[in-house]
Image (cartoon, rainbow, N blue to C red):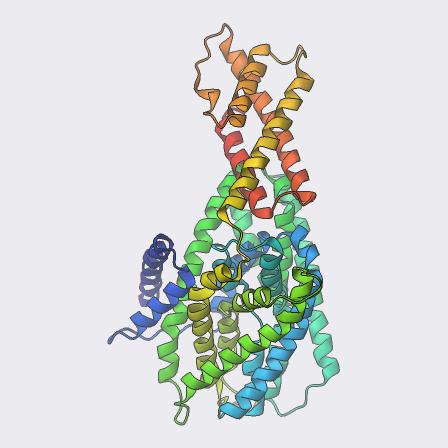
Length: 521
């Protein structure tokens, strides 16, 4: 009962803090971590003990799934080479550098220092997505950071499992075995994720009940994660692949009414889970510090050195890749490299991995160094979320890479105008058909003309013509047909790289609202 009360208190606290962060225009993850840390330091606050599998099973699947659904495959294709280099090369380099640094700076053994390196080797998709929502970064830069954070987990997970196997046993782990495990985890997770996406797509195509659709959407990430783990593949990779594939085809699987409901439900779920999990990160650190053994009092300086080493190494890797992301006469861009490096934060994933480190060795002896690895991991996560998170907007603004609000507004306005003109052309094509009443045609045309003139909607007029009910039904049917034409044009403009993914999502949301507002069958 006490655990339930603690969770409810966390939900309330995190909701209040996240709401305030939005009002004050402060990154919610950064503020939540600080508040959680402050609450944990209050005398009398009960210690927070998290079961090793809780975050990985309860929190990660829906957050990863939501981040993967937002991924734009069109933009990913333009930066897939840098993403692969970062997802493999930078993760391997980070694990090696942090492992060596940990063995040199801390009392950790070589094996446990390598475990620390693999835990902190990859960026966190949950934190990257949460921090990136409020930034107006160019599509390729945003996709580089987000795509890397989603696809580097398989690499770090394999290295983490190999490092843990070395730490808990005295038997050697061969590189052939490690390579085989990588293909099993990453390849198996990809296959299982694609299969689940196919099955879910078949089910959703035959489902018209909004409640059932919502249940399916909420269950899908958990089913993908659990099934992949049971098959001894990567649950994280499975959830990401399923989310990417289903997100790409979501406009074909559901209608406007169901899409709006799913967006609203998932927005609530993601808000609550992100709020609670970032608050937990701050609450966890004092408990871990109190559990540290003697001789580890220098952990704050060690954590700071590790965090700075991760940032410096990331900057060195990003600099040559920046030329491929935003070509500037073939030269690397320090500004782009700085933004992409500063945006690569650690978060929930490293904490979940560190919590899963076994308590004992194969000889049933306590695993020395586990407490210090957990403490250093949490401290580095807090540093990146607070320091990088709070200053990321300033770094982006000073870099000159941020898209001006006028740019986004102008793109949306131009696209709305183009959609209205496309609809008017369609009306001209069907004018004169006996199946379409002239009154319905005229009403839809006046509404589109009002959109072009930035005027108000003409739908508020009363229909006083004889047979008004028939005209109203024809009007609704015609408007749905026009919305379908506009949706197709919006998709074409997106596929032809004429508009950004953000603009496409916003205008599709407006079209869905318009279609849902028609009512009727």
